[in-house]
Length: 92
Image (tube, rainbow, N blue to C red; front, top):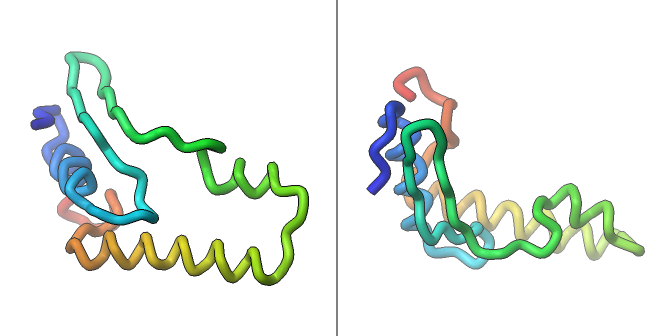
């Protein structure tokens, strides 16, 4: 369990850790140290969606539809778990 100075961040990360979705990066461990936070996740080949797109040799309409569907499905899986994006409400 993460115990940091920011309980909202702690809650957010621990809730993300519980999301089971092929479209959402998996969090394996979240460790709070005195001056830093360690988040252990699954390996992602290109690191970010932007880096993955930069490395595409060919990108057509079919690819765009697939990527949009993938991103929206991940967003919906997070929303279904009742998780709001960190920092989007006044109470976080």
